[in-house]
Image (cartoon, one colour):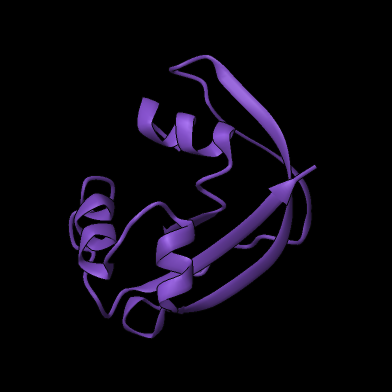
Amino acid sequence: MAGEKNRDMVLNGSKTVTIREGERACVCGPVLIGCPELGWCVLKNIISVKHTTMDNIFIDDVWKGGHRTEDGYIEELKQYYPDFNEYSVITVIEWEDK
């Protein structure tokens, strides 16, 4: 994760989902979420890992990721993955406070 916005949303509990391009190996259980550049991390508990494509994402996952629309999430992800689009394969990771 990067950026102060994501940090604040994770810390205040308004962001409980992240999306990563590709099919990532990830398992449920404890995880440290943070950003070394901003000098923060927090312990959370991964409760769900889904592999799908962006066009099959649930709107609930978009909201839990801190966005109101799928298009907003796609635009944010293009910062990190320039070729990202609605058909990109993704991993949806959801956590709760540990």
